[in-house]
Image (cartoon, rainbow, N blue to C red):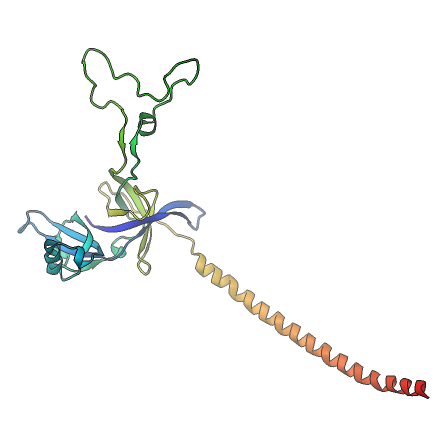
Length: 271
């Protein structure tokens, strides 16, 4: 099992060369630091602890400072433990980047859903409203609590209550693109959580065969299209300049030829 921490930036869409549109979630993936390595000999299981986002020392406890000094790094704000098959493959204080995943690989993404506060049964459980006319007096109520025999409300009854801020995992999403220079990953589909919220990308438990994505690269196409146009514009500009210079020289010569005739005509009028 492998994984990395990131932040959900938002959603967009990309196109493949065969004309398919894929909605994707952009996840900003900073280099994760290995804060702790747990082995079977010392802790009873194999795992690593990842950390991102530096934390000010004045806001750090002594225990957190000692924990980060063992790894030889600055204290981190967010920590997450991930089970791995062999923890000895990771070095304490090393970094994990976005290239840990490949394009087409299946992943599970875990995030915290948006909080909606205390909501009623219509919003929380998608129940229907009652009739609003003829004096029904039943509009947005939860309805009957159940039969009379148990003399209690049965477990699982859909009632009003707190909604959101739940840890949700979406399984079997595909990695559409990996960019190590700008530190982001494109994941197919939607990911739970608000913008700038923390998400965990892990190798898919169910797995499956890899997908192949041949995305359209607009930058190269635009560069190829603009080059011949600029050369044509330059050639046309040179032709225009040449025609303007020839026209100016012709007009100057014509003016020189006309001047003596005009001077002679003025002299005869004065006489």
